[in-house]
Length: 167
Image 1: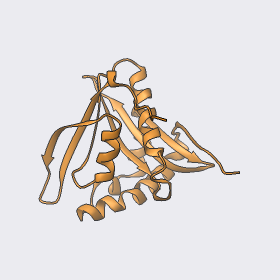
Image 2: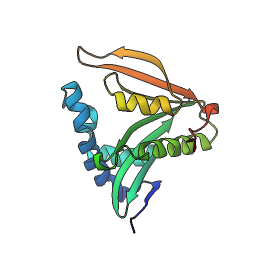
Image 3: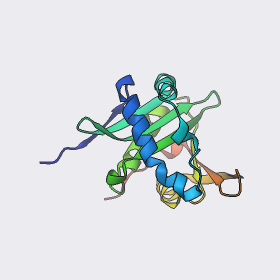
Image 4: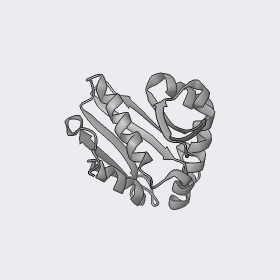
């Protein structure tokens, strides 16, 4: 019998696994944009530990292994910013990213201060864009960072609720 994936709040003990998973997951993004200096590849362990204390950080576990993670915060204006949604390459395309996205939205919205959800990705990151659109996000802004990268910011109203898969 196989193990099931569980989603829970990350703890300080998860920080190193999150960092290693993040490094693995962002290799494909770095290759896509030919830029290995992107922040997820240079972020420090201390920085991840700090994020654990300032926002919502979730992990998905398969047994003791962290196989996915996502982070989010709500700013004073009520914008819930979701970032670094990562899923181990061997676990991708099984709905885990969508489950994490739904759960971080639920938790960020639970306090009642969030008015909208917002996230961003690169314009060439088609799988990311597809996932976000499927979950109700729409592009609200694009910003050309340099000749290789244009960042697409996507958002949805909190009232739109979490995506519900149809049977």
